[in-house]
Each structure stands twice: as C-alpha cells, then as structure tokens.
Image (cartoon, rainbow, N blue to C red; front, side, top):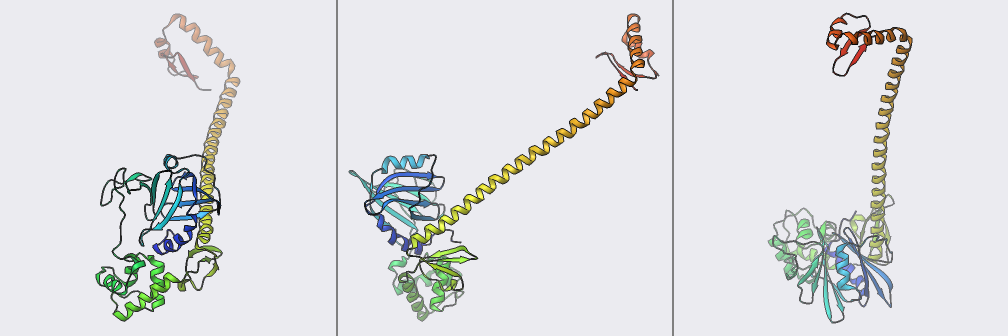
Length: 370
C-alpha cells in the first residue's frame, strides 16, 4: 500500500486542491500527527483539508470527532481563524505544499512538508518562521521561530526538465541503476520510476544509457505528466494502491476509475484509518483481555491458597476436638507448674514429653503433636 505521496502524486493533487482557493478557515483541529483545517466557501460549503504527517494531504467532506484540542492547533487557530486561502502550490517538484492565506492586513504562508518526518510550518509574508509542529535546530536546516524558512531542493526539477538536463542528471548520478536515479534524483519514487522504464522499454537495471535511450525516457516522462487517469487498484478486494495515472505494472490487478485523484485518496485513506482504528480497538481489547486473565489467574491462586488454608485449619480443628481431654490436661498441668517453676525450668523438664514438643519462652507458646 502507498505509504506516502511521491512528488508526482502531489503534482496532480495540487491541481485539484486549487478549488479551495477563496475558502475561509473556520477552525483547526489536531489529533497526534493529523491536523485538519475546517474550511467554508460559498461554492463548496464545508470541507476539511486533512494533513496526516508525514505522508498525506487530502480534501474531505467527512467531519471527525476531535474531543481534545492540542496546543499546536490552538496556536494555529489564533493566527488563521477567518483567514482566506488565496494560493496553493507545490514548491518546484518537491514534496512541499505552500498555502498562502490573508487575514485582515496580515499575510501568512503555511508550508506542509510531505516527507519524513513531516512538518507544518507557519511563516509570515517574509517567510520568517512563526511556529512549527516540529522544531529542528541542528544540521543543514534550522526550523525555529524568527528563522527564514528554507526548504531542501533537488538539482533537477522534473516539471521544467529539458532533454539536455536529463542527460546531465544521468551523467552526474552516483546511483546504482537508472530506475534508482529516476526515483531519487528526479523525485519520482519507485513505482513511477519503474513505470518510466516500462513505457520507454529501458532495462531498469542499466547503470548508463545512450542519448537515444535518454530521448525515450524523456518522452516517457512527458507522457507520465500528461496521462491523468486516477485509479484505485485492488488486491483481494483490499485497496492495494492508488495512482493519478494508469500503471502498466498494475495491469493484472483489478482497478476502479475515479473522477478525481483526491476522491480516490479520500477513499483510500478512510480505509487505512478504519483499519488502524480496528487495530487499535483490537489491541485495547487484547490488553484488557490479558489484564483480566492475569487478575483471574491471581484470584484462582488466592482461592487455591485459601482452600488449602481452610483444609489445614479444619484438620487442625478436628485434631484439637478429638484430643480435647488430653490437651486440656496439658494446659492445666502447665498452669500448675508455672506457679512453682520458671519457663526455662519447665522447658527443661518437658524434654521427651509425648505431646508437648516445644515451648517458646519469649512468646509463651507451646507446640503439641496430636
């Protein structure tokens, strides 16, 4: 199943998400790594722009229950409530979305990084960071307040790529094969890199290709960018993947055409989230089951211990009852001896006694055998 968007997925999705331009942000909700912007527009009515970090963003009509408001979403609300979306775009061919919003006399830019670990960064009109979901203060990038937002850029932008650029990319690459170079250097991801190789008829394991083969790859890339045909692919009635284009590598799989890539993604992600919720519930059920089983086992051990203690107590009681005359005489004799002798002297005299086996001087107790 698709774990996160590729740059190509985002390229197609942003085209569809442009319909939220003009929408007003009513509220912002958050649950762990999911942040939702509640939108309203005269054309669409109420919609929910959902961001599931690190890998997904989509537009939904489904309202979720957010019982608690987390700090990050509360801070976003203070800046963005009643702000209007004026622009949404992909940054180059990177997995980064920029949403520009206006509120009264203020301009804000929301950057959504759809690559691991994922982030949502709020900047002012000058791209100075105001706040972020995750801060980073080391390495080549610094994400913290009052620092200029800068995003990682690949050397080659697939959307502006010329044939000579592709030749340069393959000449410069240190990747082990053409398919890996397409996936990583050009940001296509594994599935679409293999699709390029399939369309162009190039062996994906090749380490170097000639200019004629580069031309075939270049034409295949152009075809990939213009071949919009969103489909959901199934494996045993379960959603296996979704793509904004038809994939020759999935031709044997059952698939369903979708009116839009976003609708397909919403269906796909609803299934994933439904599965996760079921898994969480089953996990909670299993934990409760284990906890109850442990309690029951502990109680069973206690019951067995009590039953054994009761049996022993009953046995002792019966022994005392059946030997009552002899025990009573022992008690009377000891009481008489105590008037004349010390406990130490009595203990000495009791050595070899048939019934009394020990006398505890400290606690004034006797041990008898009956």
